[in-house]
Length: 519
Image (cartoon, rainbow, N blue to C red; front, side):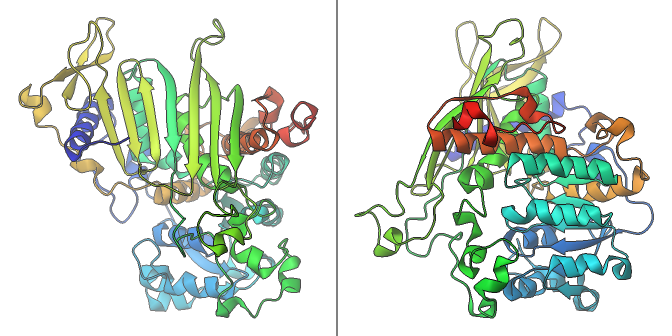
């Protein structure tokens, strides 16, 4: 969405002013300190007693981000495990940037030196009693999520697993059942559920400020066409070449190359839809009330890698089998769909590898306003201009007033004038806003301590409204079903209608084996 810097600034101010009026329990100007913003915002308190003793399984790209963002007042990292020697080193040394600082910088050399290191998650789990382990964080390649999570839950440990939840829908269901059976918490790292920015944005949507939503456009565009620009393609570094193909095969990888570039292969990853699209379909479904989709169709192809005449010879010989361009269309039920099946909201998603002109994010198009969530860090809001509606568009400021029905509505005014109250609004609170990683780990540890072993009253997850995990196994399973079904729609070039039983963790019915899907 090309916007001028001035239009973006107006959108940020609009969002900030609207949030201050409509989000009563948000303290404008609050900033995250030693603990994340989530404790104050979402209503849980500092952890009472000792931090939860946690082992990190997987210390690569995402694992190192989580290490950097982890809250020491809630979480005590006592061990790490990773198959790759270079990743074990990264866990401590980091990458030399603010996103992955490593354990030495995060905790100090003395504390970091006490953390045990394992080259196999099974060895870490075998030492759980010696370590006093209570929980694990899993940030390994997608294909290993379910096996490692199952091993950890069988050992009586709580699990926070990175997204996508599992490599197929049935594995997701089995993870939910295992967590219930073992009475341990299962959280999944769709961090937007713990993002203060997204929760504030969703409050505006649920308050009706943007009106009826009939379309959401989400995208994550990148340009990997330049030599060496694809971070997902990693030839085994020298430090990992001590691992043989035969060794890594016992962990589910065909070769060391596949382990190091696991996102590029359908056997070990889930492609663009799982790695990127699942984030944004999760965001779209949050704005739509976490309803399940009705149908999905789409196109996916290797439109760049391997195509003769495009790029260098390396592009033609690239080993990937995932699509490099995907375009999918979801149909979601509107709030009145039960009475009128024409009440549909369309959500489109695209992810491409050859152009990054527009930033990644989500655009929510409502009948009264437009909401733009940019790169998880910024939110912008503009009033819709139309007949009977004074002002609007990306160049005008707005303020919130009470409508005839008693609910809040948007009014616009020229940027050169307007009410002093609205003009003095500030978006300073949104600067450097957390993306939710810290908050999800805080709440995971808080829940372990505060629910005191009663994690599944009545055999089901504690509701979010009662302080339960904001992204538990059932919620994350629905996101995974959406992603896996979208991949199937692209593979079979069909429009697939979702079935209720696919979202039931106690049913074995899944899209991957449904005769209506695979024929």
